[in-house]
Length: 52
View (cartoon, rainbow, N blue to C red):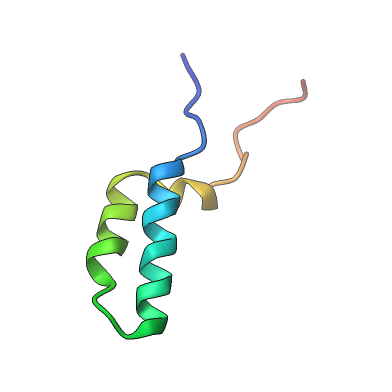
């Protein structure tokens, strides 16, 4: 099986959510988009890895 790459689009949306949260704007939409596009995958760091 192919391994998934780094979820760049999801991370960008999560960063936008954080920026908008700090500014007081609507941030929940950016957070949802970040989750949908796999931004939370950065927190699942390489747990499934063997010795290579």
